[in-house]
Structure formats: C-alpha cells, structure tokens
Amino acid sequence: MKRVIRILISYALALVLVIVSMNCSFVNIKADEQVYLSVSKSNSWESEGKYYAQFNLTITNNSSKNLQDWTINISKSGGEISQSWCCFVSDLGNSYELKPESYNKEIKAGENISNVGLIMSFPAETSNINASISPVFETEVKESPNIKEEDSNKEETKSQESVEVTEEINAGDEVETEEIDENLANAALVASRCFLSYADAPVIAIRACYDYMIVLNTEPKEEQETIAEAAVTAAQTASEFATDGDVESINTANNANDDNNAYEVSKDNEPVIEDSNPEAVEDNEPVTSVAGNKNIPTGRLRVSGTKLVDASGNVVQLRGVSSHGLSWFPEYVNESAMASLKADFGINVFRIAMYPREYAGYLTGGDKETLKAKIDEGVRAAANQGLYVIIDWHVLNYNPNEIKDEAISFFNEMSMKYAGYDNVIYEICNEPVGADWASQIKPYAESVIATIRANDPNALVIVGTNTWSQDVDAVVGNEIDDANVCYSLHFYAATHKDNIQNKLRYAINNGVPVFVSECSICDASGNGGIDYASANSWLELLNSLDVSYIAWSLCNKAETSALINSSCSKTSGWSEEDYSDAGKWFMQAIKNQ
Image 1 (cartoon, rainbow, N blue to C red):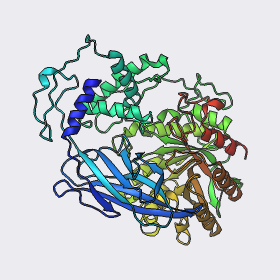
Image 2: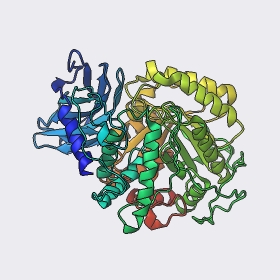
Image 3: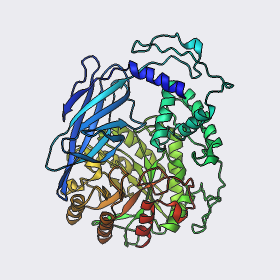
Image 4: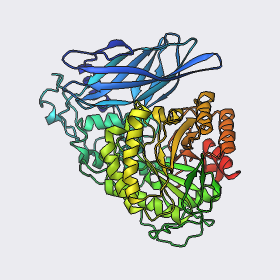
C-alpha cells in the first residue's frame, strides 16, 4: 500500500493545477484548456435573522482532455455553508474547499456536471459568492494492474512525466500483506458497489477505492472488465475480514459488461410465493411474485378538486416511501420489503426511482432490461400487496427537455405495459432545475402526458416543478389541460420551512392539486441533523390539506434520510432497531393517521 501511495504522490507532482477566481459568471480558466465554472443563485429566504441563499455550481470542460479530478474553493466573505450536496466540504478557516463525490469527479472533454449545490447563510442579503476551481487533467498511467519492474520504462505520461517503479510485488512477498488486505477490504465496500450507488461507504473507503482504481487504470470506461475483476477480488477479501467487525460482508458476483450495461450485485434465486400474507413477513422467507394482481380494492385514483379520490369517490391521502436509485439499491424493491413497510408503517404507496442520467442510470450505462425488470417486479409486488406504485423518471438538477425524446419512449413503453393496472401512477420529471414552468416544463409534460394518454387515458400523472420541485406556485393559473394531473412539491424539513409551506398553501388555495412525492426531515442534502419541529409542522399541514406524501428513501445509505440504519443489511423483515431515526419518525407519522 505504501508503494501505491508513493506512485500516487509521483503522479500528483506531475499535475498542473490552474486556479482562477470567479464571481457568479462563466470564467475561462485557461485559453488552451478551457474549463468553465459558473455559480447561479436559484433560491433565497430569510430565517431567524439570517439570509439564506441556494447556489448551483456548473463545471464545464471545454478542453480536449478529460478532467480526472477537481477542487473548488469558496471564500467565506462572512457566509457559512449550512448544506451541500454532491461534494465533500472542508472548512479551511477563511474559505471552504469542495471536493467531488466518487460519481462526479471525472468530467469528459466537452461535457459538464451541474449537480453540485450549496446553501449558505449570510448576515445580510447577497447575490454572489467568490469561487475558484483547480482542475486536474487526466494523466495517462502505463503500468498494468500487476505493476512490475520491467514496466517502469514505458512511455511518458500525458504530463510528460514518467514514473519509475523499481519494486515488484508477488503473492509470496512479505510486504505488509495485512495492511494491503485491509485497505482492499475497505475499498471493496465501494468497489463492489461503485457502479450501483453513490459510494455510500465511509469517506476513507471511497478515497481508498478510487486511489486503487487510479493506479489500476485511468480509463475506467475502456477497462471496465479489469476494474470489475478487481472489485470482485477485493470483495472476496472483504468477506474474509467481515468477522472482525470492521468490514461488512458483501455477496458479489459482478460480471464485466459492455458500456451499455451496469454492474450488478447478484442475489440467490428466491422462491415464488403467490397469494402471500402481508402480515407474516420473515426475512428468510421472501415474498416474491411474478403474477401480479392488476386490481386493488380501492381502484384507480383520480383528481377531484385539490384532492385524490378512489373509485368510490372517497378521499385518499397516499402515504408511503420511495426507493433510492434502482441502479444502486435494487435489492430493496421486493415484495417482502413492501409487506414489511405495510405492516410496520401502514404505507399505501411505494415509489420506484429510476435515475436517467446519473452513473449507471437508464440512459448512462445502466442495463435497461434489468432496470425495467426491477420496475416490473415492483409494480406487481405493490399490486399484490394492495399498494399504489409510482414509476418515477428521476430527473435531477436539469431541464427535462434535455432528455424529452427518451422520456417519451420510456413512458410509452411503461403506459402500454401497465395500462390495465389499477395501481400504477406516473411521475414524469422528479426535480427539474433551470426550467421555467410555462416555457419549459409545461410543454415537456404535455408531450409526455399525450404519449401516456394514448395508452392509458385514466392513469394519475405527477408533474415536477422547477427548483427541485419547490415552485409549485408557478402552476397557478397555468395548469395542464388534463383532469388527472397533480403537481409535485418536495421539501426537506431542516431546510425548507415557511417559504415553501406558503407555496403549498397558495397552490392549494388556488385549486392546484399538489402531491409531495419526496420529502424528509433532515436538510436538503439528504444528510445533516433532523429538525423535528419543522417536520411536525409539515406533517400537520399535509394532513390538514389531505396532501399525499412520500418519504425518501428506502436504503441503508450512510445518510440521515435513509430509512434503514447503515449497519443493517436486511432488505425486509426489519425490527424497530433496524430503522434509522428518520425511519422511526416516518413510521409513526404514517401509521398514526
């Protein structure tokens, strides 16, 4: 491991970091290697004597080289970061340093990322922040995965620096094998799932994994087979160390796939049990069905005024949970899990989140057939349990028109397949950003809904609103000409308070049906502390207006909003101790209605 670190240090010395300050505008970092950083303020509010502003950061790589890594420096200037997402934040005293997550550190030539965001507090109103970026351009590594002495004289790297390796590690060498194995075991927690999740292991494991991957290979998309094999080896090592309590045992059987496929964690085949009893849930006796009962007792839902009603005209408030991304936590979308949540929480709806553009997403390398099969399992399982189910096209941080054609194709297939199912609801754009309601989101929604209506005239449709589905007030007076549409509002109680609640009241008071298709009781990053007072205020408001709501999210990711404790590996049959603090709050909130 020390040799690996020395190699990485050698590479680091060869990197050229270019830093340019910017002030809420596009800035050309360097003429021959153009990297642009822009910051825009998308939202602001006042609370308890402080001014809060939400900033969205976009990094655009217009150079001819790939970015391997990046660092952003934010000057404090009297402000403090209260929330962040899609980055790691370090307090340097007079400034903050932002480092990427595992999934957004690499930016290909000609591409950009726009999923990094901050909420900062200031003593007075402000419209900008001072930021600088340090891009790290790709460095070519010539060593093979088994680094050997004879490889040390290969071609120079792209930075014209050659790295000489004079040591050789063989299986029989006595060189800190326990340390190497432990680091591999930690790395395996991420390596075996890095194609499935937001690398939810501890930060040190994330760094260890990616250090290992950089040395192994700097072109992961071209060498995925090698990385997959290394991940399996590391996962096997992790299993050997599971008994010491430091590393969780992982059951992996990753296969190398081409660029159009995601890496999957395989599971043992489970017995098919139809006509299951939802009250009798045993973790070792999974409830799985392939049949699917298309008809649930309450029938199709429809909009009546600002409320949802069932087939008999009774007012229905849907209360349930959402999966995390199907590519990363598919194991939680199963009938046993739904039966457990129905028994423990009293849910009547389950949301299936399909990310289109994130890592291993539906449009970015995910195995489409596997993902659609998981949706099918979820739809049928929910129907068998008498639950409604939302198929969520999880647009996140961009204009949905960027993937409009793909969305139309997806929902054409889904609505054709599930036209006969009473329980299926379609959510056509989760959290748009940078998209005006009238000129962008509404026309997009009209096109997608027309496709759905051609196959299923009666399905309930949920449409997202701008600024992470916070601007539901913009719909007032400009609703879609469709009688069975709701408009989504999302909140995270520790961040979104009176100003977002007022948007909800305004929309409802003006006849706009609102559906809270995602919420939690922590801050907007999905992490941080829980604000119980704000959470209870939101719950009281939702119940008073019969507004449906969905808790984010069913997984054991190491963040506050995950409903399952990160130490729990069960995918159904949970005890109360297995639920996180957020999970316990939602359990009480939902079942006490």
